[in-house]
Amino acid sequence: MPAMRPLALSLALAVALVSPALAGVKIGVVTSASGPIALVGIPQKNTVPLLPKTAGGETIEYISLDDASDPTATVTAFKKLVLEDKVDAIIGPSGSPNALGVIGFAAENGVPMLAPVGSASAVLPMDAKKKWVFKTTQNDGLVADLLVSHMVKTGVKTVGFIGTSDAYGDTWAKVLKDAAKAKGIAVVAEERFTRQDTSLMAQGLKITSKSPDAVLIGAPGSSSVLPETTLVDVGYHGKIYQTHGAALQEFLKLGGRKVEGTILAGSGMLVLDEIPDWNPAKKIAVDYIAAYQKLYGVKPATFGANVLDAGLLLEQAIPDALKQGKPGTPEFRAGLRDALEATKELVGAQGVYNMTPEDHSGFDVRGLELLTVSGGQFHLLK
Image (cartoon, one colour):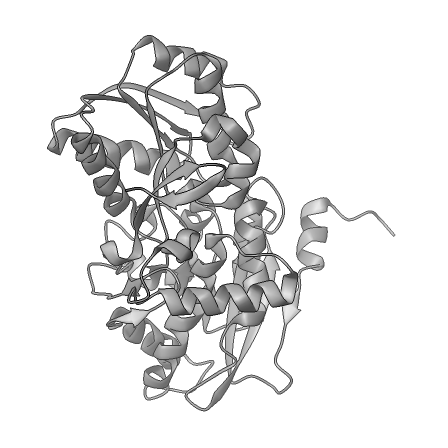
């Protein structure tokens, strides 16, 4: 028997999680549980067993596939879920470039897509294709405004940028420039890198030579670490900011002492002991962490909560969609899309969702906290 290619093997061995009874509603899940962005994808895949099992009197079946962080495999997974498994919606994929590559396919087939990705380009600017996509992370512009406002308060006049050479970095370069210009801050340096790079010395030296007051790193998951440690190694002494893409425990472990003092915006889930009990997302996050820890013995990264929130959004949307048609029909899928777009004040682990035809992320500042790294831990920035 010929050996299977790693990519094909990854899909062939993908885990399918099915409820005991035949499910009325089928939900596909595509995560990057292996490959370069596995630190993002693993907690997302692990969250699938914690998603709602029923809604509107219907059972829910989840079919989970691993795309190995490969955009080509994402397309293969989406096609299988839509054309063979006949799913009613898809949660995923984990990566922004992966998501951008399948938006057209999801729209053509009328399948709502709940993307737990960082880049706002998955839902903005809104068009006929992106109206089928909903995003369960805070839009980059919201995060950028919070970070740049802090820069203004602390006297930053110039900023450098280093980001990934993909959709995530492209979006962050744009939103930083827009937010900085609005606040009178000059972007004096811009460098890029690939997530697979093992040395960023040249980029670090170029940015440091411009002597910016601060540097913002636009990179998700483990790729956020090397730019910062490199800046420290080349002797940069200004403020270092990170996006919500660095909001995970592995960032602290991999960066060690070199990421002390980092400023970032992230979910309150990272500092639950420090946020007040009246915060609407706190109870959902506490319950999610407890359930995840009971199942796996470790706490989840916040990226897992993006998948949990996708499940909660679908749970609320399904009863209304059932008024339009039965699961497995175009009418039901269109009803899901419409119900998701009409979401109001839905509390999730990552914040509160209010969707509109123009805004398919729906977060406000209640889903964000300004954080810093101190003593090897995330803390509220005070």
